Amino acid sequence: MALIKFLNLVKFKEIFDHSYQRPQRNPNLGHYRMVVGILMLLFIGFNRLWHFVYIRLDAMVCGFFRLSRLPVASTFWRYVDSLGINQANSFLKIMGILRERVWQQCGLCYQKIHVNVDTTVETIYGDQQGGRKGYNPQHRGKKGYRLVLCFIDETREYLNGKLRKGETISGEESAAFIRKIKNQLPGCVKKVLLCGDGEFLSWDSVAACIKETFDFIIANKVCHPGFDPDGWYRPKKRKAIEYNSCMYQPLGWGFACRFVAMRIPKKDSAAGQPVQGELFEEGRYTYRIFCTSLSGKPPKVIAIYDKRANIENLIGEAKREGLDAIPSAKFKNNYAYFQIVMLAYNIWRYFKMVAEISKANNKAKTHDSAQDEFQGIINNTIRIARLKLLS
Image 1 (spheres, rainbow, N blue to C red):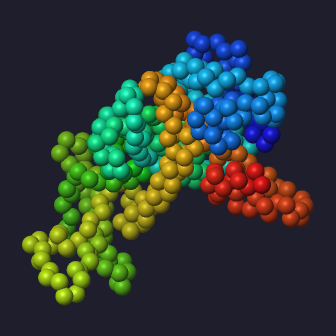
Image 2 (image 1 turned 45 degrees about the vertical axis):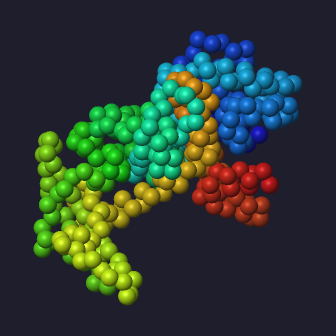
Image 3 (image 1 turned 60 degrees about the horizontal axis):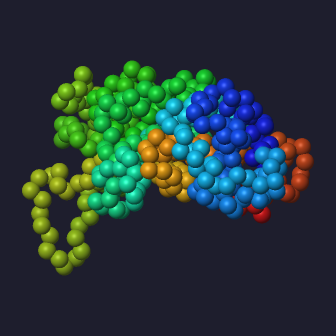
């Protein structure tokens, strides 16, 4: 019931009818109710299409569809089988309009946001299209997809992403991805700070950020900037961590960019064991190097980047909500289902944001102790928030 109220609040049917590009298949339930049915399944906590057998006779769900029982699970699977890249792109448009409406509903007006981009591996165990053997540390040698996910740090919502073959992303592809970010931003956003790991560092990515007027901090894995040996300094004398910065132009880049670095002394071996001395001074340190457009001091720049670590939690949560499910052997179907899962993920995020705002407004009007049950719901994971609503 809460989900239905939320969809009515944001006029989701109006957004859907305006932006959704319908596939050739025409289901009896209609495109809107088929898509909302899948979103309901994911919202409740089931992440596979055959889980419709558990809610097929649920009175509340059937009441929304005005049916005595839902169609069999294979009906929804056949609909997903008719989806493709065009439908996936239309779901991104729906999320862009939905984001604008929810931000207005909640009174959010961020003029500057932090955007975190990362890739993750989804191991596949069948003969799915696009599966490749690539970087897969937990399942070495197995095929998988390599997903790109982009989140807004302030609201922890999904901004943009795509399902890819299981190969390392190239510089041209990462630049094309960066250029599409601006289309998904609300109108109030004027500045963007993009943070990415070393996989995104290339001249194409840097040039795309500069062209889109984005600030950026990207980890370095391939460049070897020459830092001044006398430029290392410690902002805190009690800590052995040192910082440095320089301007450096890697081979093939259009111009020099700023690189900041921190170095951490390696721990000595246990007492009583022989120690192998390092031939060069660099061997005694662990280095972290970043390419950035920011002009602040290196400790502040690196501290901003370190906040990006939360994206790993968001990716893990999105995987548990449905990204782990690969419904089809066709790449185009999986691409569309990927965007449906992330739409359901965003609806949960917006649902909690609206609940937090409503709780704050009601608390100002009444001192009902029941409002304390949802204290901090916006910071809870989706799993905990779902259990709170259930109880």
